[in-house]
Length: 224
Ligand code: E4P
Image (tube, helix red, strand yellow):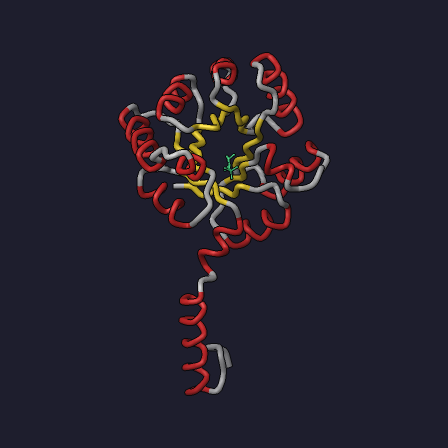
C-alpha cells in the first residue's frame, strides 16, 4: 500500500514528509493554481529536491491534443528527470499519448478516471497508475467504491504492475473506503491527514494520559 500527498505546497510537503509515510507527490493544474502563479518548472524542481529520488513525482500535462501532450511530456522528463510520472487524462487523445509514452518506457499516471472502462483502457495502454476521482464521482452519483473494487480486482487478476491511485478526496471516510475496496494507493491533501489525527477524542485521550501521570509523579515525561 502507498500514501501520496496531493499538493504542490512546499511547506505542506516538508511537514508531510516529516510526519507521514509518504511515497510520492501528485499535482495537477488546479493544485498548481492554488500556489498563486509560481514559476512552474523551478517549483517542481524544488518538490523533487524535497522528496528525493526514492519517492515518485506525478506531473500533469496541460495540452489536450496528443502530439502536444507528447511534447509536454518530453519537456517534463528533460527538466525533472526520467523517473517523473507523466499524468495524462484518459480521453481519446490522452490514451494515444499514454500508449506511445508507455511503449517507450515512460512512467504514466492515467488521470481524470470516472469509470471502470477508462481504467481498463489506460491499463491496457500501459499506464502504471490509475488516478480514480473518488469525490468527483460521488458528486455525479457514480459508485466510486464499486469502480475502485472492479479495477483493483481486474489489475490483481491480470497480475499487472499497474495500480489504482485513488484521488480527489474531501473527507477521511472516502480515503479509508478507497483502501478497503482495493486501492493500493491514495493521494490525499495534507489537511485531511492532519484532521484525521487531531480529532478531539484523540487529543483528550493523550491529555488524560499526561495529567494522570503528572498527578502521581509530578512530571509529564518518563525522563528524570
Ligand atoms: C490527483 O491526482 C487528482 O488530480 C486530484 O486528487 C483531484 O482532486 P480534486 O477533485 O479535488 O480536484
